[in-house]
Every structure is written in structure tokens, then in C-alpha cells.
Length: 128
Image 1 (spheres, rainbow, N blue to C red):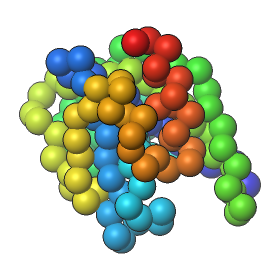
Image 2 (image 1 turned 180 degrees about the vertical axis):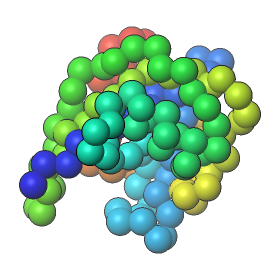
Image 3 (image 1 turned 90 degrees about the vertical axis):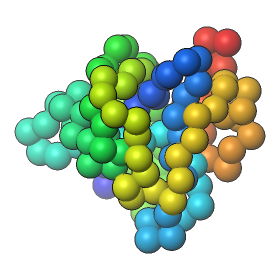
Image 4 (image 1 turned 135 degrees about the horizontal axis):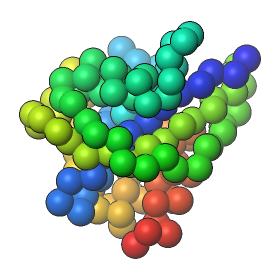
């Protein structure tokens, strides 16, 4: 089963936002780039804007689409569509995650990443 998911690389003042999965979420305690599942009839861009509003209570502007990433878990295959973004209004609040943080590119590598998101954190190092 392939699940199509979006994620936001939200950049503000040369730092990138990451979110830590809460105890009520699968893979609790891992860090990820916020986003979510693409619903039927939804474009990745529309999905990402919706998910960020639901998860962080803020509005983003999508800047660039990054390469597609895939990850295979035991029970599912993830197709991850990442986008670089900026915040349009309001400071993000962790409505679903246990915490959020702003990190430099170097600091990103020190986080305990969700396996599907870790390759994106590594890929971002090429922009350093």
C-alpha cells in the first residue's frame, strides 16, 4: 500500500521548523517535517496548506517543490512530497505534536528523525 504524503520545509530567519510526534501519534517521539496525507482529489500543494493550518494553526506560502522521496515501512510505502515554504501569518503552534522547534541545517542532523523524513534532512545539507 502506497500512501502519498506532503511535508513542509518551513524556513524563517535561516532556520527550519521541525515537529516532534506526540504520544498519541504513531512513531511517537520522532521528529518530522509537518504535513500529512493527500486526500482523494487534492493536489499536494492544497494538501500541504490544509495540513499546516490543521497542525500548526498558521498559513504558509509554498516556494519550491523538492524531489520526491520514498520510504518503505513493514506495512506501508510512503511517497513523500516536500516543499520549501515560508509563513504568511501567525507563529506556528503545535496543535498535534508534542513540540516544535527552529533548527539550523547542522542542528537538523542531530534530531531523532522519523525514518521517512531523515533523507530529507540529509538532502537539505546540500543547500548549506
